[in-house]
Image 1 (cartoon, rainbow, N blue to C red):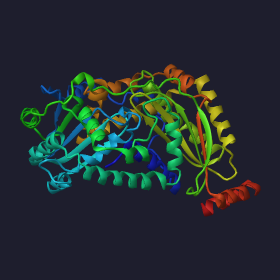
Image 2: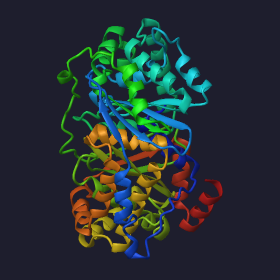
Image 3: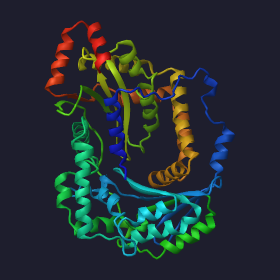
Image 4: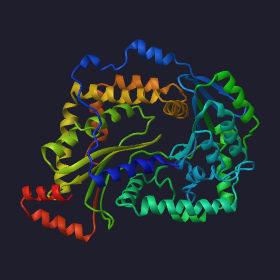
Amino acid sequence: MKNYYYEVISIILLFLLSINVYAINYEPADDLSSCHLLSSSQLKKLSADRIDSYQLENGLKIYIMENHQLPIFSLRLVFDVGAANELPGESGYAHFFEHMMFKGSTNVPDGEHFSSIKHTGGNVNASTDYDKTVYWTEAPVDSLDKVLWLEAERLQNLAITEVNLDNQRQAILEEKLLRIDNVPYFKVASEFMISAWQGTEYDHLIIGNETDIKNATVKKVKRFFDHYYQPDNAILVLVGDIDAEIAMKKIKFYFSDINNKFAAQTNQPLVKKALNLKGKSESHFDPLAPFHLYALGWHTVGMKNTDFYAVELLADILLNHDASRFKQALKEEQELVFEIIGFPLTFEQAGITAMGMVPHSYADFSQIKAVIKKELERLRLDGVSEMELCSAQKYRQMKIIKKMSNNREMAELIADGALFFNDPQYAITALNAYQRVDNQQIKAAAQKYFHENWLALKIEPGPGVRFVKWLMEILPQSLSKTLEEQFL
């Protein structure tokens, strides 16, 4: 079971450790007339794709989209709960159920959910982030009844027992040890990131802290489940080779008898305002780190903010491809870093745009900051070229279009649109929104968010590597660079 926040960071760190070149196929557009990736008729055709919507009397929202190309379907069951909903002392509870939902129910033994789907030839998994918890299944169409029954069964009769809780408590503590505490850079970077969100709903790790995990009780965990795992707090999406009318009858058969344990009006997330967040700068030693790592980030916006699309495009222009401004300046022109990669942390109420860098031994963090500062000043003054903006717009639209061609990712687009915007066709809205961003909005976003009030993190390795860095610094730069290329 994967966690979006962990996976994004771990991929970044593994990438940096291997110093492999990760290049997005992203080139500046040389034909500005093609900035509209889709014609108006193509957009109209996509908008006309039918998404049938229903709502059961118990509040469960259902969206069904037929796609008869292949005899398979994708089901996505999303609960409007994540780490952002956790009360003090209960961190990690949302993630607990990513595990517990597979530990059996009244009529399904522990592990049988996985094996039942596997025997159909399908796949099943789950993920937790700050704003939602997701359970998804891909399977042949003839197993739809089985999949729906399994989902309804665990929602209605999940086995929340001392044995299951203790079992998963230990599994989660081991997961934290393996995926955070003993991974180079990860523990330091994670703690720095959540400290940057202090005072908001994102000020703790999704996996939870060790004390809260150890102190979790059946009573407290069950209370969390009963509050959030209710039909009126869930969205079910089906995409694939199904008849919408028949599928709806099946869903109604399996889910309509599930009653909410709490009134709908109590089923609201804990909301704290993620506003007026400040920059900070820290330096840490990590004995597990094989070499230095520098990171810079900026508090930006959540996905519901009106500046979101301009910020996303600006991040692409600055960070997220080989022709990006920061990569060109730091890697190609100044030769201060081996590699640089941008990574977004975007949630419903807040966001951070960040980048990690592996510096050359002769490169000081202050030099890198000076180059970044100069680029930002130029950007705030002049904005971006039409060519840069055009390429960024096409790249963002291309990502959405590719998702729309895949059942599971299309189900994700529908579910996220319905959950966060009450719009199952939000993918179309986003395509248009990216297209409407102009240079003035890019400049305004740069002035508002991308300034020197940044988040700066310097992670230094153990004493041996620090000594090597000192030695390389006193050598001529050309010799240091040659040695680095041979040994690093």
